[in-house]
Length: 193
Image (cartoon, rainbow, N blue to C red):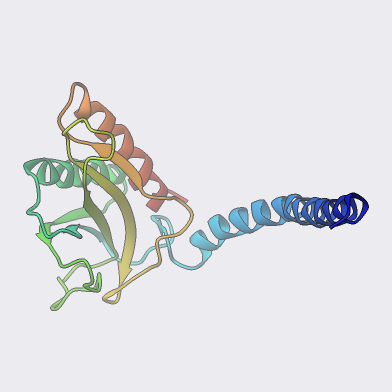
């Protein structure tokens, strides 16, 4: 290939790449709008519990632990489940509703979030999912991915609008960090308005 042909080919490739980059940059505002719409959609499509709009006198809190490697739930998972229920109790104080604590259960990774026999709760259930993960950064401490989503009529709403939050167990200050993560996740899924 002669130098002139090679330069022409490189210019063509450069223009193509610039076009692709420009196209990708042009889609960023649209992607941000989609993300914002997903968050708004989360509130419209039942992906959050709006206390002022929910029927019933109770809110159930159920926790599910799953691990792709089928490891048992760490003891901290029970503590986090209890802390999530306590947080919901605080959010409901003065609203004339009560919390039904449904406890922690280990489930298979491919299991549906719906219950075999749904508990009797006069209102929606907040499903707190704790997913066990291997140590990613070599600290030797296990991690959990935390998400929360409503369950109504034995069907879990999609988990949209807030990505899972990572909790590193063990280490100094892990409980305070876990409490902040719970506040964020439960606060997103359970709203006053």
